[in-house]
Length: 85
Image (cartoon, rainbow, N blue to C red; front, side, top):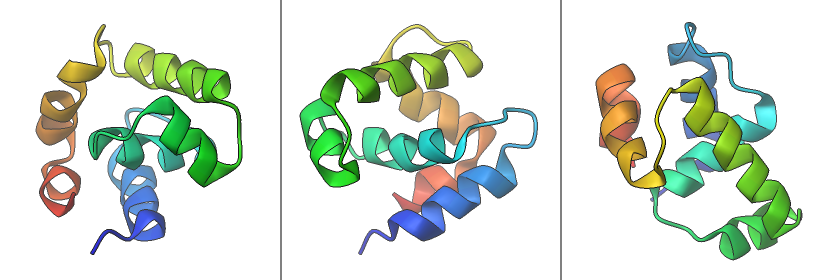
């Protein structure tokens, strides 16, 4: 089963070149699982618009334009993370 805290820690540890905030590290695995902004917002007790802002920040830091490119980018940068989701 999915362990959000463990994956968030992997993101923090493995992406030294990309510095994600703690909240971005919580949002990223949920995005990778295909959750909507509303679902993520409900899980993290934040607004859907705030999730969209974090999503945009993650995409900008990874230098990609679409959420659909996220899985491929994470797989290239952090294959252990991509395989654990």
